[in-house]
Amino acid sequence: MVHTFECLGSAFALDTESGSFFQIDSAVKEIIDEINSPVVLSRGEFACLTADANGGDGENRPTGDGRKAADANGGKVLERGTLPPSPCVAGVDGRGRESFCADASERAEAKREVDALIERGVLFSPRVDPAVSKFSGVVKALCLNISHLCNLRCAYCFADGGAYRGKEANMPLKTACAAVDFLIERSGTRRHLEIDFFGGEPLLNRQVMKDAVRYIRRREAETGKVFQLTVTTNAMGLDEDAVDFFNREMYNVVVSIDGRESVHNTVRKTVSGGGSFDVALKNALRFKEKRVGLYYIRGTYTARNTDFSKDVFYLNDLGFDSLSIEPVVLPADRELALKEAHLPALFAEYETLAAGYLERRQKNPAFTFFHFMLDIYNPPCREKLTKGCGAGCEYLAVAPDGSLYPCHQFDGEAAYRVGNVLDGSFSEEIPRLFSGVNVLTKAACAGCWAKYYCSGGCNANAALIGGNILRPDPVSCALMRKRIECALAVSAIENANT
Ligand code: SF4
Ligand code: SF4
Image (tube, rainbow, N blue to C red; front, side):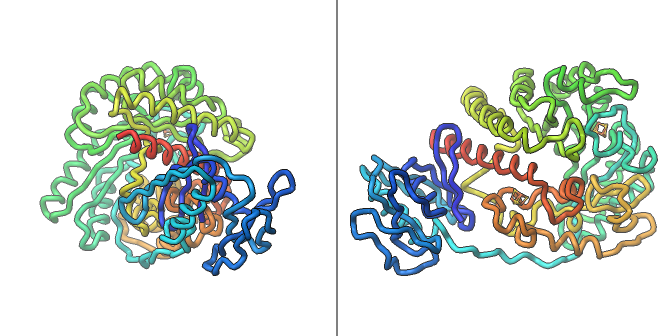
């Protein structure tokens, strides 16, 4: 499967199975597109078959006039009567670091280059599904919903203002410690473990979070395990004390701000209905000045700000270099939901964002947009790309009452409850179900060119929108694919310039 696309004024081709990625001339794009989908050309010309995409001997090679009939079975179409000028193909072999360059003055030369790449197995390479390891029962990471309280009432909140379908509550220290012990016990021989402090708003249970971290450090010393900690906060309580604590203990801090004041205040309101922007921004700026280590400013865009690149650039102008703005996930009947009708504007917006991102990074290479950070030379291993985030099997969430769920978004969903860290109950049914869900087992993903970049999307979002973890939401998929195209283009252009 080869996906061709245009982005930022250039054309590209991605060979899904081999991972090879090429910046291509429009003539080469045309050739590949014809192979993908033989077409009747304008002026009554027929595209011509030269080789069988499935490894045939190319018996139907044209005789030279470029006017032979196209392969009715969808074979490769590599030649036609009219030759566009100067095709060029240059790229990266996904199986190692290697480049292909070919300049040619004629389309026939482009065809030879495409043929050579097919021969080398880096274009139209056959589907070879990676072996996916069986359910092992090992848990590597936990999300601690340390507080089911929140001082905001965001209009798109998936957590019902923090309470997650249940009642408001803070996690007691005893439960947090039991969760840490659960993770250690379930981690087998794995040494490096992760815990995310999440909510609600974790700082509304600050002392328990601090005491839990103290317990984690003690258990590290006792067991030899190493914990990497992350916290996500809405910044409303991000005072000096919290900043110092996070600098000491948190590998990564995610701070939620949506962008421009009007955008943020429209959706991120306080419990009393006021805007939260002033407090959140003041605290986030102080945090940034003092932050030692990784952080992200993470925002959400909705149907109200489809011009979200302005929010990214606004935050960057304020001095935040590590940014992530993500599409809201809501059922289509909600006012803020992103719908199919928004897609053309959103696609254009991602291109605007990518262009501005490249420009800004020339002056400030520290500026990162999370979803554009793709290393086309060093992708993660294929099995990891097949399985995605590991929620439900390698990664679980713990509610304040100790209940275990596949991830924080399932908190409170009785049908997805896995067990409880306090009473030691643990059913493997849900973890086994989730461990079998990947891009090879989801029907929509198996034939999707983006599968090894997307990894099958978010199961929780699929359940929320489509009622089935196996059925990804088409709007989310369309946005994911556009985001990946932009990320690939950004990566290719930056690599070409270094
Ligand atoms: S800060 Fe988070 S938990 Fe609180 S209302 Fe907003 S989205 Fe929900
Ligand atoms: S974009 Fe959608 S269909 Fe494609 S891999 Fe991701 S979740 Fe699956």
